[in-house]
Length: 400
Ligand SMILES: [Zn+2]
Image 1: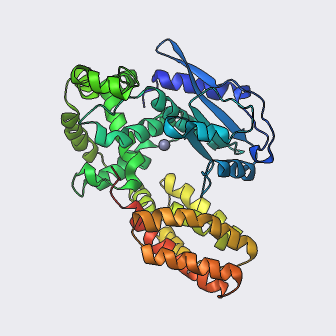
Image 2: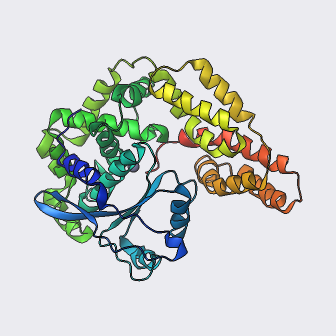
Image 3: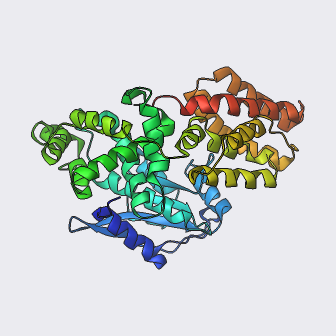
């Protein structure tokens, strides 16, 4: 891993200057947070107001605040909000009165007891900088693949900053396994978005220093009209060819043969299976129905997977556990499942097309909360839809 993204230096500085974060009182309690200057970083000798980071010591408070921005769902440990385009005024209205954030991105993050939150913040700050600087809308060849580059540079940065280990096991190995089935990037599944992205970025920064990539993707200006006007002689495609000495398509050909030639390290097959069958997401969706011991055990299995030390039988066992998930349907469990319905809709209905099945889950949920059907009936339908359709959803080709 090369470590000289100038982007990364800036992000490392931000992460090191611990007192610079905005530690909000709950927005939802109508407290006015202290006015905070957005974190800036120097990039290409300009000082850029990058993002305002609201860092929470308590996940529940963060979730309540995210609710104000319609971002709740199954929000994990953070979320990034871009203030740009049509909805800016509407979004700013939802901040407590008198609050200014002074940056185009507002990042919500839960400060977990481990260092995990720094990885999230680093990842999202890369996205914030892309939002400010990248111009890829005026390009022909690169445009369909921009999601790979966005997530790829963000994931690559996690590795390069040392928050994520074992690039070969997490990314290169699973990507090589996928490529063995034949290359068609347009059919690349969502579950490999980060892996393929990081692999492409890795191949690019082996060819030229990382900053060259960032420059090629940062257009001459951030204006759709000017970009349209200038694109004919300074498009991103042209900048890419100029920087790397070959076209984007020719690069992709070269990348795919290099990436396919990687021998997957021990354990990469199980990482691939973990992602392909959406074990992580299914576990989070069904967590309210699992005992604390089982949830702990799943955490250990996940750790073992990403340490390359898991056994196939552990995944078989986890699959059985997830399919048999039940548990006491207490009001808390109901509430927790209800909160997860938005994610089930997003994956099972929107991506896997399970329209009728999801409608039935929602219907049973309403009836069960009213006490009109047995709680077990709702739980059963919820569990089945998650186990059948969420894996299908993540296996769909990336939307573009
Ligand atoms: Zn991302």
